[in-house]
Image (cartoon, rainbow, N blue to C red; front, side, top):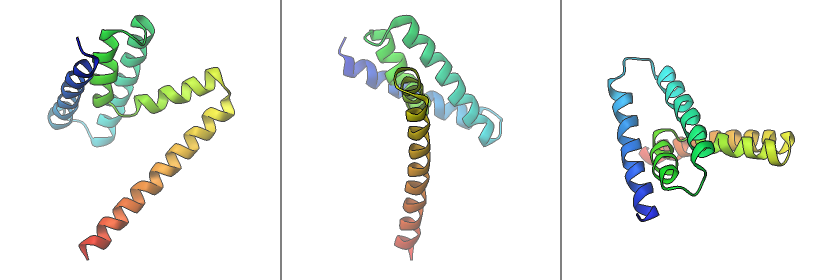
Length: 118
């Protein structure tokens, strides 16, 4: 099966599962984010370790489904890869830069939206 189709269909189901969980599970917003991200990270890591990276199962489930279900997995995976294969300093620097950069980007986006509405 075409790898793009596997990723796309997996992504569709991941996004729909996240939306369904978000709408119908009675938890506060922070608990929902935590549960989604922790479950997604654990299952994605298990599947990559069990099936490998170049497998149709991981294309559908990990690159498609879980990437749409939780957006944090890729970031955490990269941090772990840096820590294991390069250094703790590289991993920590990446974490700081990613978090601060994204926080600044969110603040800039919000400020631009507010300014556009004036």
